[in-house]
Length: 225
Image (cartoon, rainbow, N blue to C red):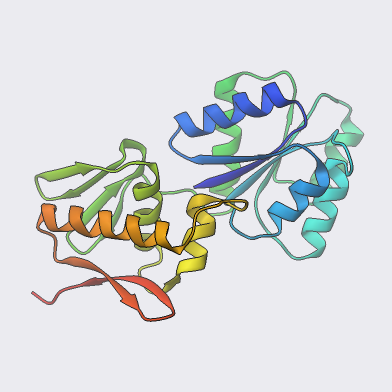
């Protein structure tokens, strides 16, 4: 999953991003409210970690704009303020959870998992399609007794393909969700990683293939027995 952190404290933002990465997900950082809103409206994020006190646009205003656009990305709000009125305001504007600084690392990750579960976006421990089983936290793709490790981008691509196996995923969607909003990566990067995954499917001896729909995108297919 890809998480957007909107936090002007550079050190804290980096720490949060490291924690999210160590938990097996990807994180992008915006250091002011205007940039955060622009990134959040891209629709590529599974959750938003939002500080209240931000330059250019505070967290409350950002959240208000986000919800007015009917963007339902789950939001975990962070603040140094502990006053009840501030917590109520954030929740009334559409935040899913409110965490007061300072907090422990484990507490932050638990709250983030909670907002994802509440929205039904939490990645299950294992995802299955055809003869394949993907275990995101272990970064492992398995067919029967055979298993291969996937790097972060291979893992996220495979996760998206397996979770959306009933539809075609456009190349542009995969590029934004896996490489991020401000990426310099191109379609060639998507094609290269799809090729890596196809080779791993062959190594596993899977009947699952990644098919390309010309000028549309990719989808998983299972060969008939």
